[in-house]
Structure formats: C-alpha cells, structure tokens
Length: 177
Image (tube, rainbow, N blue to C red; front, side, top):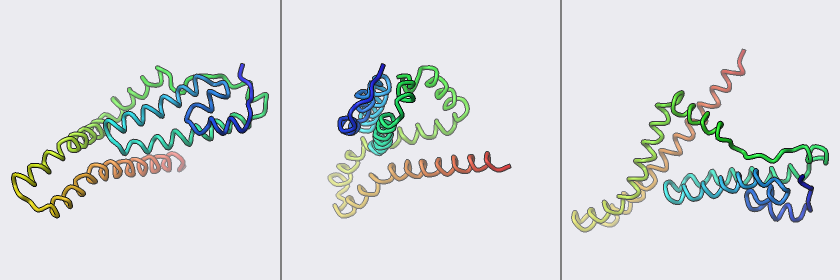
C-alpha cells in the first residue's frame, strides 16, 4: 500500500521523470516513465536529435502527474493501483495500427527518417570532397552545410505539423453532426 508523502520531497523527486511516482510508492508507473524518458534521449542521441523534444513532454507529464497524485484526497489516492503505463497487448495494438491501417504513412516516415540519418552520416564526407577535391570556396560550403543540416529537420518538423493538422481535422469531422 502506498502512503502520501511530504510535499517538499515530492517536489524534489518530481524534477526527475518517474522519481516522483516512485517516491509516492507507484514503482511500476515511475519505472515506466523513467524508462520512456531515458529511451527518448538515447534514441535521439543516436538516431535523430529533434526527437529529444518528446523528452520534454514526458518530463511535464511526470511532473504534473506526481503533483496530481499527491494532491488527491486520501480515499482516491489509496484506491489507485500501481501499474505499468504500456502493456504488451497495447504495443501489439499500436503495431497493428501502424502496420495495417497506416502502412503507407509509416513507410514514408521510416524512409524519411532513414534518409535523414544517412545524410547526417555522409554529410562530412561530402564537405571534404567539395572543399579539397572540387576546391569550392568555404563561404559557399558553409551555406550549403547550414542548409543541408537543417533540411532533414525541417522535413520532419513539417511532417509533424501536417500530422497535427490531420488529427485536428479528423477530430472536427467526428464532432460535427
């Protein structure tokens, strides 16, 4: 059984995603949130740095979730069951949705992500060839480098915006009689 804790220590622990939930006695929730938060940073560090913005979403969720839990009345607080945020059957459902219902969109996103990663890996090689072999001036190379580094990130940002617009339009269609 979990027990309500000090508001000061809850605040201190809530600054680390998942630690606040663990401090309040919800170990499974805390581990889920903490694992998600650090996996986002690992994947963003290895594959695609703009994904790090999702870490902020997880951080805010954890911070406010911790304070919400601690501010619940005692009877509601003690009634909460500690459980993982994502279960195996939910992962299978997400997999089904991505691979069956949105197969084309998933494929396009994966292809663009792969191309972006490849481009980031071979960019320096192209810069070396352009500067030493082709003798292109550094001013032109700096402009090209700046543009080519921002292009993959801009494409992903545009896809995220378009996805948001698509979700809003579909929600509006559901709400209309």
